Image (cartoon, rainbow, N blue to C red):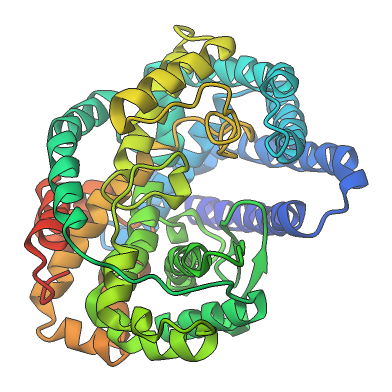
Length: 507
């Protein structure tokens, strides 16, 4: 009886943790969307208090005993309970690796840095940003060292494990080395091909109220549950909140409707995953999304494989034309020209605006900076020079003196998040592999897209990915869903189909 009660004690304890994390998630959304400028310092103090409280709850000295007793008493036939215990132990291990004083200090420093970044980026002020960022990096290095000492992993791997459990930098190096060999020649071939193709682009400006209507319509078609979520505006698009209350954001530019539309499709993919997680295990670790690489696979699948496909644009183009067409160039709203416009490849400074061919170069660049930065082989003052060197090497662009479009463009590092960037390209690889499995299992899937019917796609993903939560480890989740563990060949095949073969029956 005592052993069974240990598991129930764990369930109650993690329910309390999840409820507090729920409040923290909404406060984080408010920080990015609604908070008045003068409240920043007080919000940083409040969030630091909450993060310390959550860390203390996960470091409760009763938890190891409860876990040991519950694992001993667990029924071999209850595989979900066993998985929940595994994930509980993972969270406890991650929390106990870092002391509360560091959690508090890093939370405060990261929030101050991020709040200042919103101003300094617009001013292109690297010098003014640097002292706050240096403090964030100093504390992140301490965190990485503490996590490494606790886990036996290398410092950067210990940070990456927070976002991508089981992934190691040696594996990332191999995957990225393969891409670095593939992409340069591929990009040049695509650019040469696209130079010979004419493309008409819709004329702006595109009024923001109409752009919002288009985004909401796209969310509806994708299957977003508006009873448990909403769309707002922030400096940097994101998906936050919790599965029962998912908050996604976008940003608008009157001269570019595609920036908003694609960010809405992307963040809705994240939201669908959250809304599809196993409700019967709500408040328990096993109900969480498996990894950020899997999370990114869902957002990228809906943005890239679906949203930019010729077939989906056949459905969406008349809606886009009705809402946004103001200029004389009516032909630009045809599916063919929208497809060519939305799959145009052009090396660009900004990661979030990058096409899917050049996007991996942005991720590789950041990975090759943040890893030595955390390991102490690179300093903050060196970042602009190294950033420029790699931008020249990978994309042929110079960022000398252009900090807002260089190392100040992303929120991740300013907010203290390191080890996350590889998940974006791992997500692109996962998305291509998962989509090929759906395409194989659902004949006529692209015809569904042309009708605006994504029900079979959602059902497949719901059964194979979303409802699994963290029941399986990443490799086993992919193996059961697609038939094999991560294989980068599917990403390269996807790019080849779309950008060189132009096979519109499989894009």
